[in-house]
Image 1 (cartoon, rainbow, N blue to C red):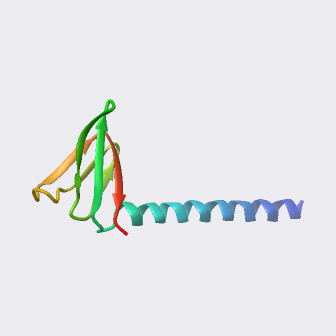
Image 2: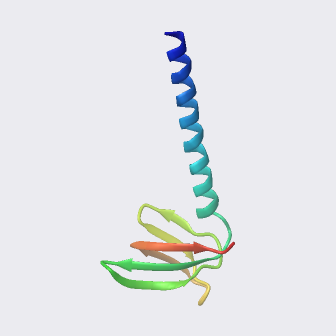
Amino acid sequence: MKTMMILATVGVAVGLSACTDSSRARREATFSDRPADITCWSYGTQTFQGRSTGKISDREGSISFVDASNGRYTVIDGECRLIYDK
């Protein structure tokens, strides 16, 4: 019984650390200050293609950023693909 308790504790610890690592990696990629190429679609039709100047905020189906082509703060609803520079 003691062995099962130790194995369960180790399993939970490994599982929690994996979640923390993936959350940290997502935050670093999503909320970094690096520019990104952005392409968005709505119902299969491309609605936006451009580049951000830096930080992109992602909240529940919409993204917001400063558009590099015109310097305006832009908010887009829809499915978007973000490709960050290295």
